[in-house]
Picture 1 (tube, rainbow, N blue to C red):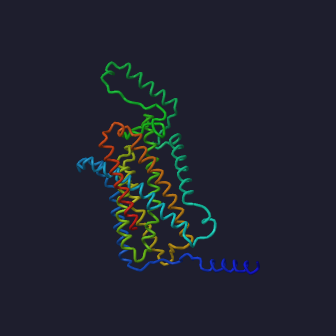
Picture 2 (cartoon, rainbow, N blue to C red):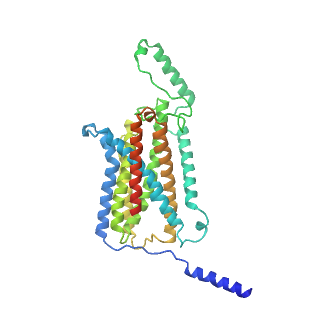
Picture 3 (cartoon, helix red, strand yellow):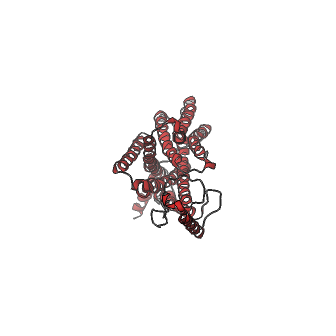
Length: 363
């Protein structure tokens, strides 16, 4: 028995000795000029992708056809959804299940757990914003005030002699009309006096800021990775250009059709430019610490894995709830649209997801 015990102890020691250790260096191989050029190229392409849909939508003189916005919007939706599953979940799994990691991080499926927690947190945030949020800077409307306002408006039209010639103004007051209990039609928000419009505005602003946060979050780590990449730099650089540009188009098309108030007409441009700067700034930081940044170290693997999991949860929630369910199931425009329009939107979205999945194979 003693001999067997000694043998088992020896085997355990040998397994421990041959266990892989985390890499404490990086594969940076110089070419600083090309890396600096990559910073500016990615900055320009991603900024154009995020801001062009906004500019084109607001300048009718450009005469950009509506089908262009249609393609950008739904193609971008597919890109965002595929990014969550292919470009975030996969790398997060690889990072947190790396053989060199030890301790509690290896004893649970943390990627799935973090994604699950992120989804519930986002839903709670959106739930609270819908009840108590005030994006307009004006006073909020409670239900009794809203009911009074609707009643007084109805009585005013009733007493007006020409009321029969005025078009009816639909008000959605039926709970359960969609997943947040209101019809989210993309109307232009001018004031906070219309409770239905204010609800719609709050919902869309919440979804946009969640989407922006999730995209910027993982763009930072893309930039850090590119900054210290080795022989795979050339391939990674090309993939990231297209990845960031298409993702920018998806974000920009959402910013372009959102109901921004007149006093905040520059906000979508600022959000688009913030996205465009995220990866270049991360590249600059990565170049600054290129001699000390270890992408394969235990700390870096855990940080990347955790934050990729959070970003995946954000984009999965936004993609499935806002970009799929909201757009295709609960939007009145789609309920009344021809089947050809619905199928075209779906096919465009699938193409965006397929392209991003292929880019994930080469990254």
